[in-house]
Structures are given as structure tokens and as C-alpha cells.
Image (cartoon, rainbow, N blue to C red; front, side, top):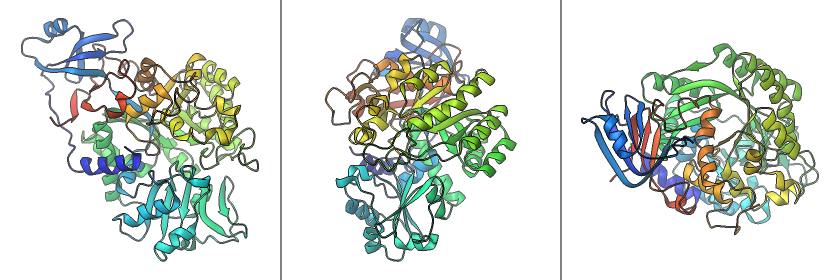
Length: 550
């Protein structure tokens, strides 16, 4: 199923029908028996049963051992054809944007510019502005950016703003350009680009900092809450017991804090606050870190460059398919270094978006120094999409976590070599090389750029093929992860990346009761089984937050 069709189907099935259910009281012991339990505890990797009480794992072991410890009054649930794994964690996602993507036209499935316009026309969205997300010109014939002309034919007077799949470019119609005051005389902002035709007229596409020239009305609190609710319920339905939200604004944080105080968050949320803007950075520094029931604010996200697909990723050498550009930096080295140090000194974990190899080099210059100055601060390189071989070593030796997203490789494999060239592409999406170098790996999806389904992420990590199984044998077949390594990336690796390895990530007595029951064994079953697999139960802190209908 295509990502756009999946989005629509999931939105319709999720709205109004997924509810947080407190199945178990704090005093009752519940035993789960399954075909296989993958504990990820190297001392006892496989079990048959586990027991929990009051949000804590009471026992993990054989069926007889667990039943003996649980007591005669324990409730027993049996899943004879299922596999239980520790709670799956997406180490890099965007909850608000996921909810908004589920509620607005989804353009991921469009294979031409005309089809993208048709999808917007067919949507039922109403309002002063028409917004959508997900177009990707790299999927279209010719790979050229779209233009305002095709939108103007259908939307001559309503402003239209369509965000590219990576969030680093927007496609506007003429009315949106007019309201933004963008003309041929408007200069490109530093760290951004107004795409123009041969005569210098804006075509309707803005990249990176040029996006800031457009001021779409901010969502109301009600709209923000609706999007967040849908996103959180979707994550629970997919077996995600925690999301690391990469770059949260204060308004979104306030909504989640209120829900957390009420005990209404179905999944855990580990927040990286948005430190890109100086004023917002100062505001978050003043607020400091915080930890609630399921919501923790402990990290900051800084963005050094754009994305490879929209040509904003900062590369050491020019793009192979467009030698006139090598991307750009979105923060000057001086500002980036000072801001990262300020947050680290305040006790924040520093996470840096770096996609191009030059951005990764600049990020590591600062992050390695921060790790030395603040032991166990666990700085993070988000995406780490193109890494020079020397920086693989620096990543590991500098105690910097590589937070990577396997679905990016399977989405980009059709055009990445054309952009990077045959030599540099061998350094890209190199998850296995990170592990070989001794690095810490945390895996995610970067939703809604990719599907939030972690089972699809496990498939991508194990195969490096698209969902049709292409290219046969996998793209750069030395780089796939084993089933065990992939599962660890979404569990133990993500737990370590959020300082929670002593509480979650493994199914061990005394740890928090976060686990997922799957229709598939993600380690031993054939990778293709992951594409059609389902989540049967998601448990967070001992609470049943999603149960599949029987």
C-alpha cells in the first residue's frame, strides 16, 4: 500500500475509535504468555511469559516460572502465535506535523505534478489558506521542481502552501506569493533560496530559510490539539510506546504538558525543544528541563543544514547532478557552537540535524567537544545521512549518538547516487558502518516525512530495498542490519539515546512495563512479513493503550 493511501486509511480508522484503556488495576498481577518473548536481555534473550503489576515487570521467564511468581489470583492472557518485544520507540519524529498530515491533503503518492494538484483539488479542506504536505519532485519525470502555474489554474484566488515531503521546501501559488510580498525583486535570504525562472521571476518554490517569508496563520489551540490527539493515537496503534519529538515549539509543548498532568498521554514523549530561533532558544533555556509522568523535556534540536532531496544539505563538494550548488548552512558556525554550548551548560542533551557530510563534520566539531566537557551528556547527530569515513570514527570515539532513519534510504535510493556521485554515496545511510565503528545507533522514521510504522522501519533496516523488494539484494548490500540489530535500534538504542536504558528497552524484572505484542517475529521471520504484520497490543507503563479488535 502506498504511503498516501495508508495515511488516508489510517486517519479514517483512527479518528474517534482508538481510546486509551486502563485495563489493569495497580494491584492486579497480569501474566502474558506468547509464542516468543524477545527480552533483549543478553543473559536471557528468549522467554515464554512475563508478569506485570502496577506498571512494573514482576517476572520474565518460562511459563511455569512466571506463573509461580505471579500467584494464583493473576490474570493470564495468552497469545500463542505472537511475539512480545520491548516497547518500540521512534527516535526521531514530529507529532504535530504527523497529525496535520493525517488531516490535510497527503501528496506522497503523487507521481506527477499534475497528480499532486489533483489530490489537493479532491480534498475536502476548507479555510482561508489551503495547505498540504508530501510532494516529492524526485518521484516525478524529469525531477524538476513544480511551479506556481499548475496551482494557479485551479486556485486563482485562494493561497496554497504545499510543503515538500522533507519539510525543507514549499510550493506556492501566485496568491500565496502575493500575500507574502515575494516578487522578482525579493532577495534570497541567507541559508535559503527563492527558485526562479530564466527571467528571474519566482516559480513558486521556496527552500529552507526562504520558507520564513510566508506567514501561514498558526493553527488554533483546538486544531493543534486535534492533530496531536490523532498523532498520539496513531503511534499507540502502531506499537510505539515512545516518540522522540525532534524540535517541538512551546505551544505544542504546553498542550502535551496539560495532557500529561491529566494522565492522558497514550505514549511517552521525549522532547527535543526547538532551539533554532534565538528568542525561542532563550525562552527554553529559561524554562529549563522538566519531567512529568510520560513527558520529558531534556534535549534541544538545532538544524545545521537542509535536506538532500530539496538540495539544501550542506556537502563538502558540489552535488554531482547540479555542480553549481553544494547546499548551505542554516546556522553560522559561531552561532551554532555558542547555542549548543549554552544548552549543554544548562543540562540539555544537544541533538543536531546534519544531512550533508560537511554539516556532519561541523556538527561533530562541536558535539565531540561537548561530550568531553559534559561526560554522559550523549549528544546526538540527527540523520547523519552522509558521513565521511573519518567522521564514522569521530562519531564513535566522541560518544555521539547516531540517530538515523532507515526508511530514508529506501525512499531516496532511486536518485541519491545521481545527487551524490558513485563514490560519496557509499558513505550515505551507513547504519552498519556506524555499528562497525563502535557507535551508538538509535533508529526512527522522521515521520511524517516517512510512515510512522516501525515495522516498516525494521523492514527497511534489514533489507535496504523498497516495498517491492528492489533493488534485488539490497542497496549497498554491506549496509543492512540484522533482525536483532534493527530491533535494538528501535528499543535499546533509542532508550540509551533518552537516558532510559535502566528503565526501558529490555524486558527485565523491575523495569517499566512497556512492551508490544506483534503478529510477527521481527528478528527471525522473513523481512517481507513485516510489511503486512500487525500490532495486537501496546502496553505503556502497565496500561493497555491499544488493543487490536478481535
